[in-house]
Image 1 (cartoon, helix red, strand yellow):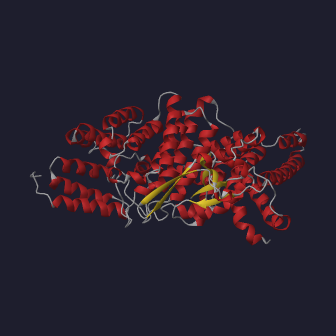
Image 2 (tube, rainbow over the protein chains, first blue to last red):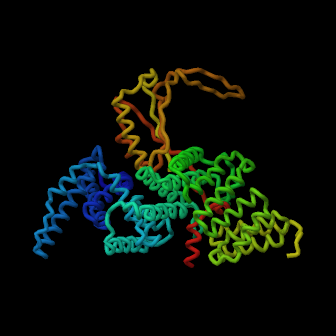
Image 3 (cartoon, helix red, strand yellow):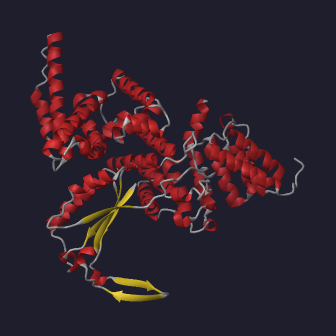
Length: 423
Length: 137
């Protein structure tokens, strides 16, 4: 067999095994960048050896052994250098490392968790965290990440190189943060995963809005994380939220590629398997205590998932969940969503009252969903002229061409109805 | 993309022979790793076809036949639903599945709307990410 035949198999193995390799090597080498290089070297060895020798029965273990051997070499070389340079009798016996190596895969879960915390360290920008998470934990290549984010490969490569340099310069320790930092650090990890998911679920730019690959990547990393921190309610909450949102992917687009709003979706197309997984994850989060922001959003998504028809939606519960969410995350966007839920639960006038309070909110000034929500409520209140103006404003703010088209279509709908308002 | 991994029936599975403790342990180790790696979505074993029923539809008539069914090798004894980036990835994973003795498994891709296109996010959907982007602008 030639290396060419094996390439797809080996890249498949890379995606699943590389995070474990990089995690373990990061602990040994204390440097994520070097860890990744050594892991890559091990895969190069596989590419040269496996075509002749065949794929080993346990490719992951084979790679780990090769990678660890290379790591030992590096450590020894470093030590020699260090001794020469500083003539320091630094007692770092190689046996200590050997011992760690024969220990096998015992601590691999801990290493993976440490790697997640490091890749999402707050010293990194959000973009860097996202790229590093996909690269180191999702097992994606730089080219794949670039494609997913519609950026050039060198741009992503540079972002990753810089991120690794930042980590090295900040001497970020390879460890699970102590309890006092843990909550904030975990939030940083969850945020990166959710950003990846959102980028796949409703991309912020470009013609192609849905990138199912990123949705799957985020779900996979999220599921792995929830397994590694089973006592963290928010990890399960995030997984629940992503599973339930992902369950609607097939229903969200019409035959011509047009977007379909939640309440107009064919619920028969919702993925029951993912809904079931989402509800289970939500239950796990609920059992761990009161819900955090992700858990609450998942609970809201679950209300929709549980409703067989839009008419069955428990809007009062959704409004109550938004009330709770506003307490924890009092952001204008949450307030806006609360206005929508209140409008459904207690009438458009009540919803509009809440939405109107947000009009002067500076952070929402260019947010197309605010005029879009107001337009919808105004339309329901029989004020089509105002609704039309708001839909048009929303269309002008929308960054995505599909969104824009849908909003303009709704604006035109308003003209079909006689105005009952002078505004 | 998702795949169904179908475990074909055998004389033993059809006879309702329960797997040995050792086999069960090996299988649960294998499944545990699939879950840990975020690959496995669902999976179950099926009872023998002697407890199953077939419905046949023809010219507006439906006939019901009780199991067992004869063509053992064509029957399904269990399944996984798994998620992966490629068929190669799933094949690679299941190369090390704890089977032996001529057992056959079949990997089939599940239909997905690959050409999802794009869409408007629902109004009720919380999207902090977008807002953060705009704050920066």
